[in-house]
Length: 216
Ligand SMILES: [Zn+2]
Image (cartoon, rainbow, N blue to C red; front, side, top):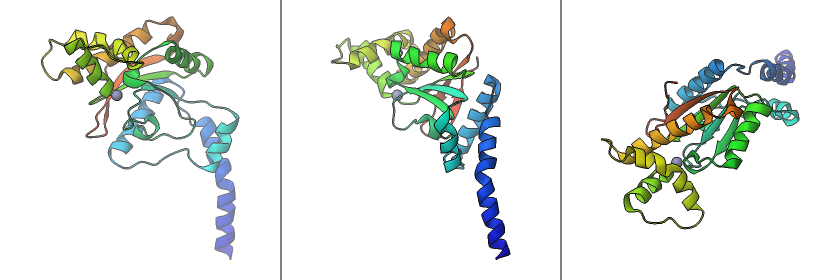
């Protein structure tokens, strides 16, 4: 009975303790945010995820306000969900996703919301291996064949990266992915709306699950 009572007491106290961790444990600088993302991805790549911040206490804590510690602009690709590949939970990441991380005013406004309104210190532009949007942009540049419908807007946005890399050695799609991340990162870095945040590029490797951050 004593053991049961003790267990019940611990269980009752635990949510409050976790809530306290939620409030005080958030990385508050870009360097700490980057370190947390690196650590989370290392867990993901090693299949040692801890799936943090998914319990009842976290739900209750973030129900009243949100304080994400990093913003991830990633692709819509179903294999690269930011919360999973960085092993984060509710309220941790402000995730913005568009095919090939293509920028438009809605995406830029969403980034501004994260940086200015929520004070997120770190923006990660996350490209990935074998990106379908980059492949479509390469095909578009290679053949000149018009792209139908709304996809044309996405392809046009990535086409400069495909054009810039068409004569480089190596895999054209892979080079386009890397160039596209660098171009988007540069564009965000030059925009004073995001001046308060550190902006880094990164690439997700589908085969290993590892994310490599660009030197910046
Ligand atoms: Zn993609």
